[in-house]
Length: 367
Image (tube, rainbow, N blue to C red):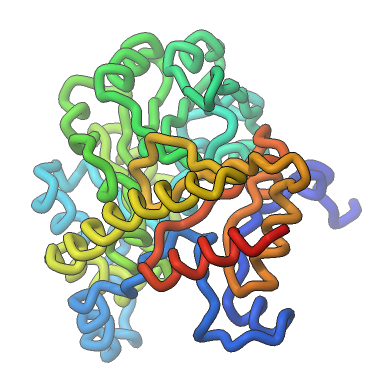
């Protein structure tokens, strides 16, 4: 038997944002001057409390951690008013997403999602032998949960809703999410709130008592600044979480992850500073980009990024992406990173004022 899986060999891989080291080497630029605006990272760095806790936990490296990350699960439950038995932790949301698909969708079944959206949803579905159902946006990149419900089939095990949505940054009203869960009672509805801190929306956890088929996902990578530590979690009714516990790797969370994330949950000062700065810079970047008359920000983002449309008919997203790299600015070319967006869109992180200035200046310099 040949050592080749034809299904996996045909699946595309995730395209992450470029690193500053790569761009510095490729274009001969000082790495410290590069504005990295393509990975939605925290521009103010990691939570200081989380960083200190990681350092303090180093002496535990020789010991096996608790196999369920119990300490972190209890801390999350206390922070957000949840049942610890209804919380599961993973090495980022990207570990939990395929786990959820495997647990709640039969092999050969379907997974519903809007298009475009976070590509890991469909990549994980395909890798797990499930079929993605792509539900297109309406005009002006407006997404409707009723379209998602109408597209679902009897074999649809999971339906993903991202709020704030990636890449538009727009939020779904809780009434819409609850309606989707009620319309699909035999489907697990996953509300992905990776960018929730940057929005004005109430927490999705509020919906859990009313929606037994709802799961809410969060990450420590964004507002807490722990992307390199790899920590995410999901909350749902305990019977649903017990199924995931039966599937997850036994020691999927190391002691440093647990210690750092648990401490970061107490770092309200770092989160509040980050969120306030992002919201202020988000309004500023929208105003300044729209003033160029050659580019336009899609209105309504409540995330730590905006979606920028290329209006100039002489340009496309790939050319602008490459021209920005030459000028030391990293963004996401949506024609590469997201399905169905074509060659007119860039996703741009809302960074520090210095990085916003660099991005706008570089954008204005492209001819």
